[in-house]
Image (cartoon, rainbow, N blue to C red; front, side):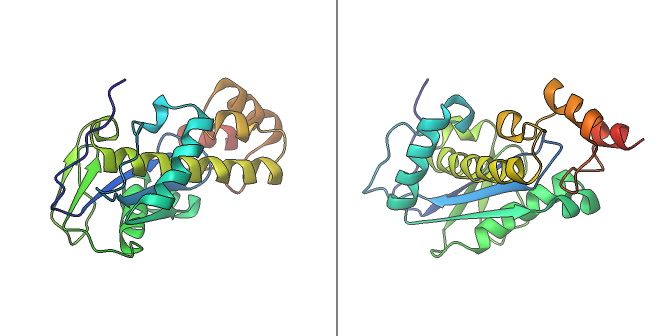
Length: 196
């Protein structure tokens, strides 16, 4: 597991990433992070490669040491109204707009840039390659997992804390048994099927 590389120290770079596109319940989350080159954080990599405990520890370090960080979200109703891709872009815009420090450049995980008024580039597998994007992926994942803990308490029996909203067999069976919650994305096929 190679640690993500720190970018050019003269530019203020905001890494941006999202979590929850493939889920069938709850908001999609995005985070934007500008790291402080004088306070490097070791162990940054793609959030999916880290244990939950390690992610949470790194999230605390990021919040304490970054020059700026912010988390944005797009709600289930927005996802169903404008589609998941547009909602993801919206969550990224919201995270970027909340940064307390204006970056010179953005690096976004994936193959497209959200409509943000800042120079930047999309980096495929950026969450494993660029430290700023890794940090954003960690904050977005921890935030979304916390949201799933809230849904677990609101809607017991669905297993949200376990599958985090992904369409696992456990989740699909719970949908069929318990029905669709107001937090389920009705534009997604497994939810449509459960409603039919």
